[in-house]
Image (cartoon, rainbow, N blue to C red; front, side, top):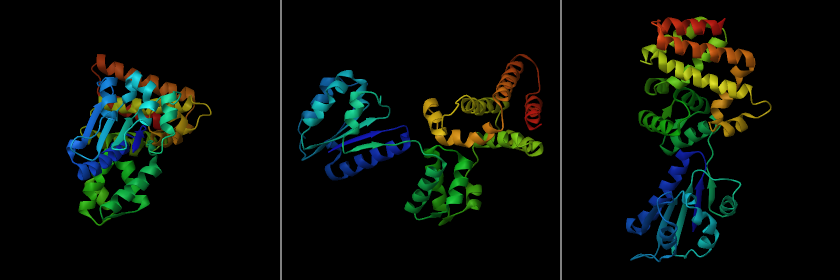
Length: 306
């Protein structure tokens, strides 16, 4: 059996790999498992692992991680896999594949090909609902979306939170999420910008205070604001590209791009450039002048709100 695992979603890819390996080891023992890294192993070593028969077992499993890093393997993969003994289960893990290559086109045709893409907000919400169900808890779509907006899009973090929340309650609701799941600075910075652009100066300043109360330093806030402005600049200069196309080209989560699209619509490209220039000037002045960082950033937010 040949399985190919690829895609930008490292969390789901790792989870599928761990599940497949665990199932095999439970049946055939750890001694029947062989792991090789294509960036370190020679072609001859990988070839030997694929062609040799299992030792003191009826089956063996070979896990090859990034074997295409070895050019010789990529060139001879089709012949190697055709000659794979029936006693060998093979898992090829290729997080990044050149979709123009003959190697990719060959792997894509295999029955066991699985590609794990990044999930958008809706996909993450559905995944959280399923995760909660597996753990014996119930989670509504609205509360799943709220958890994503509060914690962020990192699936490992979300998995940890759903594990914790499932132990706390059979029905996970917003009250439980607010009690147990800390709000991530990244998520709050987006909300802070969104609030400022909506003209709600009072609430924007309150949210800045909340960030400082969470021990987030002004330089960290500047860095996160810069990142959000970077996303806005990408959207403004993308012309007719869809959010998914922008995310793919920029190698970031489609969820992040979609979430920022509303703010981007309210700005011209010139305004976006001005905000970036002003923030850069603040960063440079704070490094060379004895300015009050909080007052300077609060003034910047008031400028946005106005």
